[in-house]
Image 1 (cartoon, protein in one colour):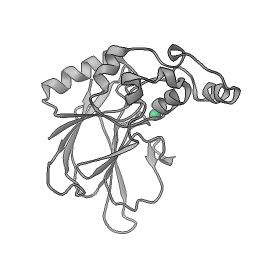
Image 2: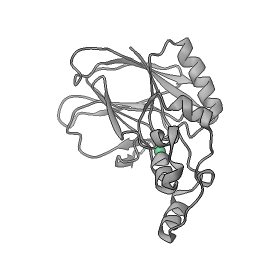
Image 3: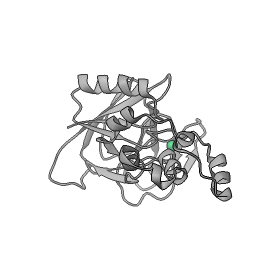
Image 4: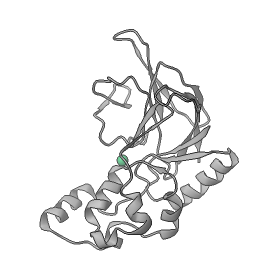
Length: 222
Ligand SMILES: [Mn+2]
């Protein structure tokens, strides 16, 4: 099964058009929107001031109203990001209707082919000496983790020995990487903007939903 993972679109309609044209050409069967598919017009800091003051911003104060784009995003497998959380917190409930209501009430995590998919804003990130950000914290599940949020593209593998070395591969556009049991983390770069990208993944459709079934990924420029 061919899966497209699209992270951090931030409501970029031109990028969405380029990506959907490419996913059609690649015969993608499943599209995953890995959080921050919408863009909140209110900063994190301004949002907490508004909330404390009991302010009631209008819908268009909070998000660029784009019913056509929302209608195309809604049927995809959506995973909630921090932008959608902030939009949901700020828009008065009578404004949260139709596609927007569905988009801001997506689940925070999904399992796909044995991998755990999250946006990434709830992970404890730490910065490595080479400048890349990796999610920290204890890894008890042993599951392949796929996230966006950092706007960087990379793959982390770790040898199975206790305390085994961590190996980081940069996800340059066009790069195809085989996935195996040593692959721990896939970070999908941002779909929005000039360096717009997405991820093409080959995932087996086996009967064992909790076994790791990802076979390869390709970082795609959009
Ligand atoms: Mn984010």
